Length: 82
Ligand code: FES
Image 1 (cartoon, rainbow, N blue to C red):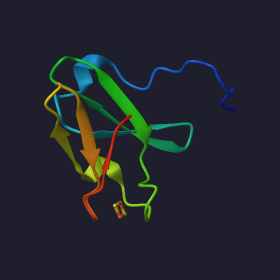
Image 2: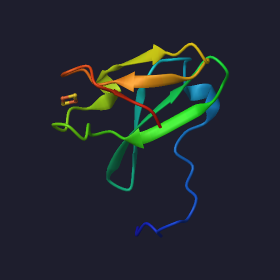
Image 3: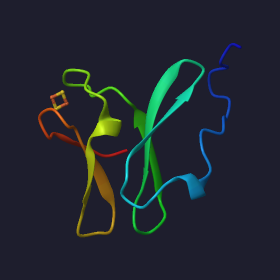
Image 4: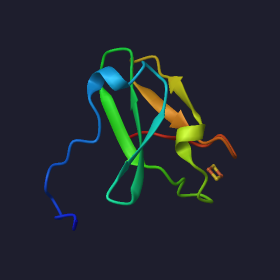
């Protein structure tokens, strides 16, 4: 199956995500990390850290004072927002 650029795809249902627990999903051969903050906002990024390619889904969420959360890379703990 070929992925159409800009086309919407369902990666996961909200109920599959625990608050502030990153989880890996694969769509058409590409890995993504999804996480949900305490307010129910869902974030998604490619699952490869832009620094050295570690799997962000193996990292952890860091809660911010404004209620949002970012994901921390398991290798060097750099933080990324969505
Ligand atoms: S590999 Fe992710 S911060 Fe270095």
